[in-house]
Amino acid sequence: MKSTIYHEPDLFPTLHYQQCLAISLFVYYSIYQKKISKTAVIHHNHALKPLIRHEGHTALELSYARRKDSVHTNLYYEKILLDNVKNGRMEKLNEVLNYSIVGQAQLGVLSKHNHLRSVQYLMITGIALICRAAIEGGLNEETAFTLSDFYIQKLEDQSSLIDILSLMEEAIYDFTHRVSQAKQNKYSAPITTCIHSIENQLYSEITLNQLSAICHLSPNYLSSLFKKEVGISFSEYIQQQRIEEAKKLLTYTSYPILDIGSLLNFTDQSYFIKVFKKFTGITPKQYRNKDVHQ
Image 1 (tube, rainbow, N blue to C red):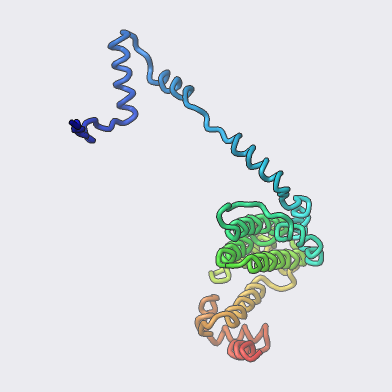
Image 2 (image 1 turned 60 degrees about the horizontal axis):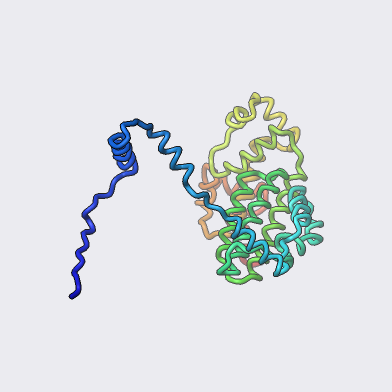
C-alpha cells in the first residue's frame, strides 16, 4: 500500500536575513547563556564564504588559444594607427591599416556564438579608441562623440564582415581628416575654446559676452584677439559657420529654406538669403537646385 505524501508549501514563512540573524542570536543565548554581536557573526560568515575563482576557466581559455595558434592584432600597429589619427596623418594610414584593428590579423573573440557580432563588438571598441585619439589631437569633443555615436550605430546595422570593415575604415579616415583640418588652424587656448563653443551652438544664440565669460577675458580683448588670429571678426565667423551648416542641410535634407534659416537663428528669410549669397555667390534655392542636378 502506497503512502500518500502531503506537501505544505506555505508551512514555513520566508524570513528576511536580519530576522534570521536575530533569531539565531536569541537561540545561541538561550543555549549557551552568552551574548555575541551581529558584527562578529557577519564577519565569521563572510570568512566561510567560498571564493569564486576563475583560474581554471582562464587557464583553459589560454591553453585553447595557444593550441589554435590564435594571436591577437599586434599592439604595436594599433598604437601607430592611433598616433596617426591623433596627429592627422592621412598619408600614413594605409601603411598600418592592414595590420591594425581593422586589418587581416587574428581578431579577438567577444562573442563565441556569433562571429559577426564578435567583430562588431571589436570594431565598436576600436571606434571608442579612435574617438579618444582624435580628441587628444585637437578635434572638438562634442564633434568627436557625435561621430562616435553615429559610427557605432551604423556598425550595429551592418550584416556582413566586409561592410563592417569598410565602415570602420571610413570612420578612421573621417576622424583623421577632421583632426588634420583642426591642426591646420593653430589657435591660442581662448580662441580654440571660442571656436569649439561656436561649433556646438550653431543652432542657438551665441554672443561675445557669453564666450568672454567662458574664456575669462573682456569682450573687447577677446574680439580683437579673435580677429587677429582667425582673420575675420567674431560675428562674421559665426555667419560663415552657419552658412556652412546651411549648405549641409540644403544638400542632405528636404527642410524648407525658410525653416533652415530659422533653425540657424537668422532673423528672417531675406536676411538669410543675403548672408548666404555673401558667402557663396548664389541663393539657397540656387544652391539646392545646383546640388540636385550634379
